[in-house]
Image 1 (cartoon, rainbow, N blue to C red):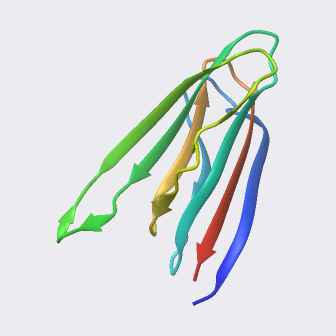
Image 2 (tube, rainbow, N blue to C red):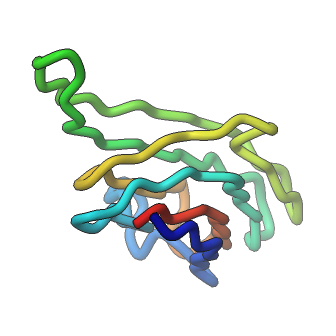
Length: 116
């Protein structure tokens, strides 16, 4: 199995407030370890950022359709590290989505290791 370190960015997101934008979807044949996820406020006022994990990962022969939400208030010009030193394991089909209280006012960076 190959381990490849990667990064994905969005200069501004989401395109429309209240409509979460897909940042990443785990592709077939891959497992992903999220190492870091930062949200930077590029607006002139505080923004509330939301990170969603949408997962249909099967555990112990039961399919779990879950959506986890992380919500953070981000001050003017600030950057917030969502992961805080933790790791997140994503399996095939799992999706990371980003939303904000104001459209196009979050800059997003996600660092991850892809295992294929």
